[in-house]
Structure formats: structure tokens, C-alpha cells
Amino acid sequence: MTKNRWVKWAAGLLAGSLLIAPLPHQEAQAAASEPASLSINGASVESGELEVRSGHTYMPISRLSELLGFLVEYDRDSKTLTLLRPDTAIRMKLGHENAEINGQLVKSPAAFLESDRVFVPLRTLSSALKTKAGWDSATRSATFEDPERYRMDTSGGGAAWVSFTSGEVYTLESGLPKKLAQANVSELEWGTVDLRGLGGNAYVLTVGRQYTASMQSMQNRFQFLVKDAAVKQQAHFRYSGMYLPTELGPQKLPAQRAYLTDGQTVKVVGAGGSLAAEYELEELTKQAGPFIVESVTADYLLVRAFDTLQPTIVNLRTGEAARLDQELLDDAEASEWSEVSGDVGDPLLLGSRLRFDRQEGEQLMFTYKRIAPGSTFGQEAEVSYKLSE
Image (tube, rainbow, N blue to C red; front, side):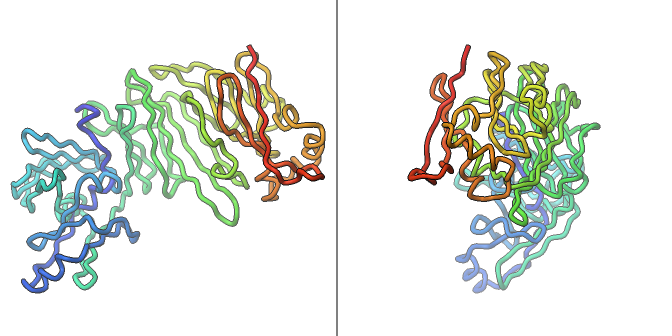
């Protein structure tokens, strides 16, 4: 199986079980003009793309791939569809009223191709997953339950799954899902899955959740360096505070190196999964951690200590570190910040801190709002940091 033949299939699972009772002819004609909707585990996820035919509900695989964590392979020559995730394998041939579920042949409504999209019957998916499904003809809505709540990613030429019910993590090995024995994310009730390929059968898998609660940003992130279907390195990062990446994080990042961080250490990973460098942030910055890591490039690290949220740059060319509010701002601004940097709960001050905007050659550009008393108070300004040799 090649990368180009595989696509993410998160929602495929849900497509399986929803058998719709046949409708009278007149009702069917009227219903056909209204879009059907779908909810998974009680949350509405789809409206307008379901197809209702001959009393069965169908879903395009392109949409399902985002919802239920199925890896999908479609062979156009043989018109054969393969759906895979750790608990289920399904094979269907378009136009045939049967399906192979975990090696067993069963009857099934036929999958079909229309307008260059492949549609799969929800009934077959729910049967394969042995899960609950339902249909409300009055509201034209289908419901589906996915107890394991799988998510997956296929970026970078690999494939990985996470069950947000058990916390188990799987990787694709020799065409089949294999459990990663040292990986578990059971602390997360839900989240995102991101895979960054490194070549040589290696990748960095990041599983995390970021949300806002009680006016605070909550971050919980697990990272795993996987090579040859085994975990070689891992890191766990937690943060609870006022730092919002959308408000204070970098506007536009330059090319980033692959890395793992727990907020105290940054481990840079090279091609093939080799450990290229390891940086102890407290030692480098002479500040107390933990740290939010904003940027890791070949030339520098950009981090913020939890207790000040002021940006600090570590110049990897020279090994020198500088807290940028002290390095780049004029005396009046630097003096004001020396008094209030410890206040990480004031929204006005948070929005006034230095924020990475862009890189122009050797110049790193930052924006901020002036807090020193005077006619320029509250005005936005820009400063730059030059990378030295």
C-alpha cells in the first residue's frame, strides 16, 4: 500500500450500521429533496452529503475519513474498497451485495461510485463495529455510536491511530495496525492526531488537546518518536494559564525542525529518527521553567517561561540566550516590563508582549504594544533581532 492510495478515514466506522426502513413512494420522493444529517456519539458531524437509496443510508468515503479513523484504500481497476482500523477490516467491491468483515463474508447493501465519489452503506459499517445506529424519518437524521472513538493520521507516508476511549496508540506495520506498547494517551478524552514523517520508517506522532476553560488556555500534549514500529523517545507537555497561541503565538513560522518537548527539554529529531540535539532550557536561558516552545529551527529556539511569558531566544549559532523584552525594547519600555513581567493574568499586558511576526533573512521581526507612559502608550511597534554568526 502506498501513501497515495491511502487516505484518512475517520468517519468510515460510522457509515456502517444505519439501516433505514423503506418509505412509501410519495414520502420517499419528498424526502429525497431534503438533505439527511448524521451525528456520531451525540455530536452533529454531517449534513447534506448522505445519500438515501432503497431504504439504506450511504456516506462518501472522503467525508467519513475525517470522522472515524478508517484508513481507506480504493483500487479503481478492480473497484475494490478496503477500510482498516485497529479493531476492524472491511473489504467491499463496488456493485456487489456482500462485504468481507474481518475475513468473514456477509451480505451487505452494495457500495457505489457516483460523480467520482465512492459511497459506503452505514449499515455495513455499524455491523462491522457491532455498534448502535438509528434513523429518524421525521427529521431525516441518522445517529451512530463509535465506542472506541478512533482518530488517525497518514501524513508523511506513515499511519497511526489513537483510541480516545482506551488511550491506546497503533502504527501501521506490514499493512496491519500494530499496538505501540509504550504509548498511551488515556489522560486525553479527545484531541488531534498529527504525524510528521522523518524517512527511514520513522516519524514523530503528536497527540494533544487545546481548549479554553474559565478564561484559561489548557494544553495537554503527548509526543512519540516512532521508528520501526517501536517508541524510541517520548515527551508529555502540560500547560494551564493565559497564553493563547492565537493571540500571542507566532504569526508566521519559518521552517521548523521535528522535535519533542516536555517544557524543560527540547529534543531535536533528524532524518531517519536520529536524535540530532538535546537542549536543557533552564540551563540555556538561565530562567526557571517550564517553557512554552514556540519555534525550533536550525538557527535558534524561541521559548517563553511560564512565569513571565516573555519571549527568549536561544541563538544556536553562538549558544547565547537573550530575553527579548530586555534586549530589544528601549529603556522606558524595558523598565516598565521589569515591573510587570510577573503579571501573566492581565489581558492588556498579555496582548502587549512581544510577538514573533516573521523572519526576513537574518532579521527576526517582533511586534508589541507600548506600555510606557506617554503619547505613544498603547501604540503598536516593531523591533528586530539579528542572528549573529
